[in-house]
Structure formats: structure tokens, C-alpha cells
Amino acid sequence: TAEVAAKDAEIKSKTVELEAKMLEISKNQEEIDSKDSALTQKQEEFDQKVQEVSRISQEIINKFRTQANKLSKYHKFSCLDPRPHNDLKSDLLEQTQEDLKQLSEDLQNSDSAITTLATEYDQKILSLQEEINGLKEEKQNLDQSNEDTSRIIEENKAKEKELMRQTEVIVNKLKDKLAKQKAKSKKSEDLLLKAEAEITSLREQADGSKAHSEQLEMMRQEAKTESNVLNSKIQKLSQQLKDKDAQITVLTQEISQEKSQKLKTEEDLIQSAKSKEDLTTQIQETTEKLALSESEKTALQKEISKIPELE
Image (cartoon, rainbow, N blue to C red; front, side):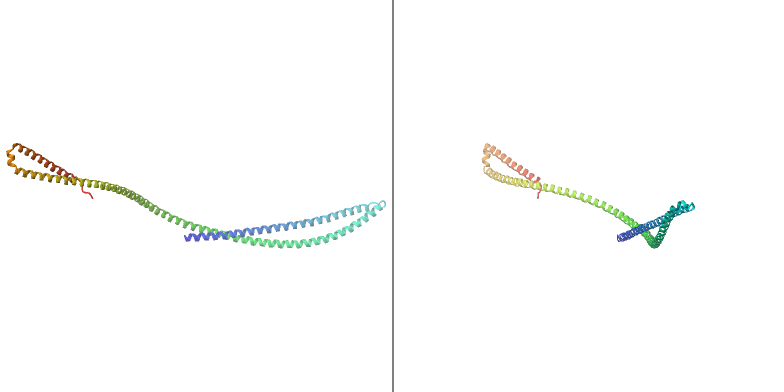
């Protein structure tokens, strides 16, 4: 939904801000490490200079000790009997004077060197102190910035947590809606399956009806063929019936003629028994033929009546 998209965009924006802050913190930490490294280096240089001053001071002290030992030896010789040692005393005195002169020069040079070194060291110490103070101030600023960044990160985390909670609430609502829609979809799917089953049943019925229609069509074709055959038989039987009717008509005419002849020759028939018997036989034969024709006609009519009416 639009609300979820807005929350997602806000979370992404906050994430980008947090990444930028973390990058800035990383850069600040690198800068702090660099400053700490420079401070350590300056401290090492200062320690080296102090060691150098200590070394020079120790050399001067050693020279003083050497001259003091020489003076101590001269003092010992001077306390002894000087007569047998005049040459030695003269050499020692001369050497001692030279040593004192050299020592005086060394002391002056050392004093000048120490003064110069002290001045340089004071300047370097002040410079290092200023740099250290500056680094400390920068570190404090960076620490403050880191604290602010940490506070912002914590606030952003809290906001992100709240956004995630709201998003989870929205997602749960969407899940509930989706579950309801799925339930509705399940009902719709059941109805769809039922409809598909009914459609399948109707298709099967339609296929059965089609097969039945095809069967009926085949039966109609067969009936049509049988009808044509029966019509042909009816036509043949009708023709036979007409032929029989014609025969019956001919026989009827013959009988009528014979009756006429009988009436005309009745007296002759009475007179002639043989002729009478012949006439009786002929009458019987004609009657039998007539009866036979009537029975055939009746049979044909029955057979015709048995044939069903066809389209």
C-alpha cells in the first residue's frame, strides 16, 4: 500500500543518513588516529632531544671528572717533595694549564650549545604543546561530534524501531486481509470447481445427447431406408392387389357370362345330366377361384394394414 511504501522510503532515507554518519565517524576516527600518531611522533622527537641533552651533559660531566682527577693528581704531587720532581711538576702544570684552557673552552662551547639547545627545545616544547593542545581540542570536538552522532544514531534507531513496529502492524493487517481474501478465494475456487464439474457433467450429457442424436439420426436413416423398402413393397403389393382386382373382375365377368349362358342353356342343362354335372363342377371351380381371389385380397389388405405410417 502507499503507507507501507512511504514507511519503507523513510526507513531507506534514515538508513542512508546513518550510513553517512557512520562514514563521517570513520573519517573522524582516522583523523584522530592520524593526530595521535603525529603526537606520538612529536613526543618521540622530544624524548630524543632530551636524551641528546642528557648525553651532552654527561659528556661535560665526564670531562669535569677527568679534569678533576688530573687536578687531584697535581695536588698529590705538589704535596710531596718537589725537588726530585721538578720536571714532572713542570710538565704536569703545563698539561694541567692546557687542560684547564681546553676545559674552559669546552665549558663555553657547551654552555653556548646547551643555551642554544635549551632555546630550541623551549621553542619546540612550546610548539609541541600548542600542537598537543590543538590536537586535544580537535579530539574533544571530534569526541563531541561522535557523541552527537551517536545520539543521532540512537534516535534514528529508535525511530527505525518505531517505523518497523508500525510497518509490522501494517503488514499484520495486510496479512489478515490476505487471509480473508484467500478464504474468499477458496470459496470462489470451490464454487468454480463445482461449476466446472457441472459444466463437465453438462458436456458429458451434451456428448451423450450428441451420441443419442447421432444414434437417432442413424435410426432415422435406417427408418428412412426401411420406409423406402416398405414403400417399394407397398407399391408392389398395391400392384399385385390391382392385378388381383383385375383378375377378380375378369373372373366376375366370366362368371356373369357363364351365368348368362347358364340361363340361356338352363333347359339344355336340365335335359343333359352330364352337362349339368359339368356345369356344377365348373360352377364349383369358378366359385373356388372366386373364393381364392377374395382370400388373397383379404390377406393383402391385412398385410397393408400391418405396415406403419412413415414420413
